[in-house]
Amino acid sequence: MINFDYIRPSTQKAALDSITKDVNAKFIAGGTNLVDLMKHGVETPQKVIDINKLPLRNIDERKTGVIRIGALALNSEVAESELIQNKLPLLSQALEAGASPQLRNMATIGGNILQRTRCPYFYDTTMPCNKRKPGTGCSALNGFNRMHAIFGATDQCIAVHPSDMSVALTALDAFVVIAGPKGERKLAFKDFHRLPGATPHIETNLQRNEIITAVEVPDQSSFANKSLYEKIRDRASYAFALVSVAVAVEMNGSSIKNIKLAMGGVAHKPWRLTETENFLRGKQASDSVFEQAATIAMKGAKGYGYNNFKLKLAPNTLVDALKKATGKVG
Amino acid sequence: MDKEKKLENINENPPYKQESRRGFLKKSSAVMALALAPPALLKAAEKDETIASYFEKIPLELSVNGTSHKLSVEPRVTLLDLLREQLHLTGTKKGCDWGQCGACTVHVDGKRTLSCLSLAVMQHGKEITTIEGLADGDILHPMQEAFIKHDGFQCGYCTPGHIMSAVACVREGHAGSVEEIKHYMSGNICRCGAYPNIVNAIKEVNEKGGSI
Image 1 (cartoon, one colour):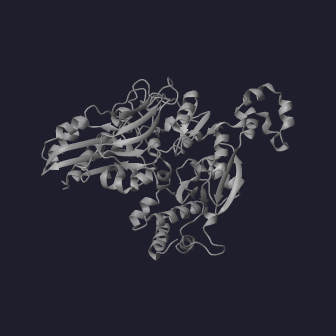
Image 2: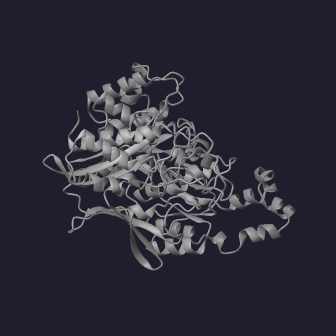
Image 3: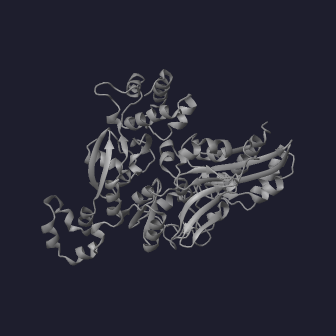
């Protein structure tokens, strides 16, 4: 790892001033992704700004029913928080499905959102990669692309976003709370991460001089008891998703009153299934309705060779998750 | 706390940052640099960066297995390297060094943590427990005893990480069933494949109960 300057500011203002001043500076919180990328030579910040002294670790419920999770709350403490387990079981499940206990003890909520893809070509500095070095090409396009995207990719980049938590938060209509020189703003999760387009190196709509301070999840009380994070991976635990589905459903007898759906492991960002949700709303829960929903969800999907299996795995996982969440398990 | 404040100030505006150090080094001749450097750095002094990093050490205080240490480290030094190279606590193992295998697992303020992905300088004021800190003199920790009894290892390289993780797994209350143990021990890889015996060791310690 090349050396760098290290500072540990005590205030948000000092942290923001510092990152604004220095274009080669990076924030560090848990460090589980940044330190790894620095060891690989993928990230080479000249200055590392340790934000762990900022008071951003609280998890609380507002009067409006909104749950606010500080950006520095650890993945493990959010997953195990009684409030989150009761009110947002989907989020708790998704966090438990990610990484390992050690990593969950280190990684923060803000860092989880901002983690980079695990595309092996992105990590291998001897290979072309538009995300790491714009204009060099995409090695995964005709390479070993088993883990890669089937939705929203371009010839510039077919990497996927690796976060499980972000898939659940996208389904739950959560917001990313951001502080910057002009004050605070909120971005819906579905608008936070970007598709690769022609600029795969720009992964989110967070500006360089901004910092994530929290995540806010609107009241989910009607969904809390019928939600599920289903993750399919190469081994039973501690592996990135091949395909995952986050579903939260509100039933009215045997019909679907309201539903929220997102997929992971399939795109450069958490993949919200809005059209599929619209189709399912008001329908009777049944196998054939779920099959039709899966067909709608898969519109526009494209395989790149080694990942063609996802074209079948994704709809199958969606149908399975819908059956389980609605209680229609056969 | 005064000490805390002092360190903070150093970090926010370290004295060596008040002048352009790199500029100074570039301007000064290599001979001058060599004359200033201690003998051990003579070879390293051929590169600007190494000299620069020599000046860039940051003070760090932390407790390891109950003993307080006042150290100074370069920002890039990981907790793993600090433990092994500076404190000579070589029980904590470097496996992949990329946060994938769990061999470097230690407890930081009681939480199991990967020391290879932790920057040492970020552990200021924290309490670290390594495999060396588990036993009470010659009396092994119950988890160490259980690993021996159940033959929970073969080559032994992953064992310190496994034991540190296993102790945390029981303390967290995540060792209630074989399935649960498997899930909550998945961050530790054993390439010899001693998993069934490791699971048995953890199960036994958990079933015996008591504080470990």
